[in-house]
Length: 346
Picture 1: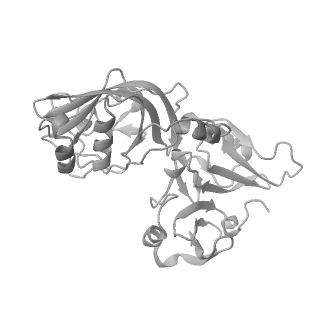
Picture 2 (picture 1 turned 60 degrees about the vertical axis):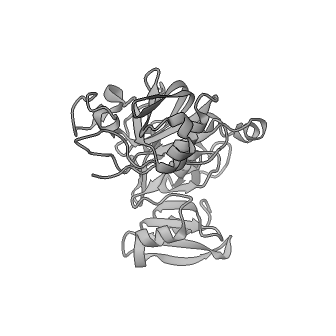
Picture 3 (picture 1 turned 120 degrees about the horizontal axis):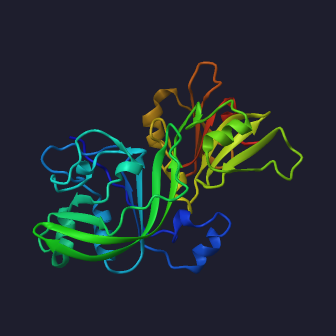
């Protein structure tokens, strides 16, 4: 059996991906942030023939859900692959099961109830509300929302579903505590894996038209309104906002991911070895080993680093990571030898 790991982020900007890039800073100062939890379920699902629930959730996730029950709106985000296990794999009650072990697609069988064991500290801290319950289940009053613009066409797609919900009060029956959730709106952002070959279906060497077709969503271009046509950038209009595609001499040369504190989708993009912006420099060293080439970051001083991993001996394809003085990954670049340039268009 493999255990699911949960990621939780503290209170963040309200709306997250619901805000456009042009207005988000203004919204950030004008509104009080909504509480926020993130369920990152990309890596492991539970396969258990006796009970069907998500095991070992992050304690902060459970405590945030209980604290915010019946208190108003909050942001409830899910990150999964484009296929998910059958209902029984995510439900506590084994009677609710439509087959075991066969992945299904989102449209035909999106799981609706998510159950988890309640950590001991949460049981103690919320003893009055939980009344001895061992499990916490989230039960939507309606089906989880899939936004109208969702298209699952990318071969490497992961799903980042950001939902604004209104949780009801905690109710307890036997040893199960339940929170009904009312879904108010949802934004879906397809995510892909960053590799030396590109990002999902957008491959290094593609023309602009090919990149636009591969990314599905409309793309904006920095070439518009300028005289420079040899080097420019494309960006998906639907996000992630920190993701950019550098076109050089008519071909995709590199894909870059820059940390964006207002866009959680950006921070969820991973390399093929599961590194993402916000990770520590030691995570990169552990993932890519002795073949990493480390250099001083031109803009961050001696404590900032460039860490470059080449996929071939000719150093024509690879990934570069940039860190700040604190050792945190602030940017990732993948593609041709242009990743070694400190400036994106030069």
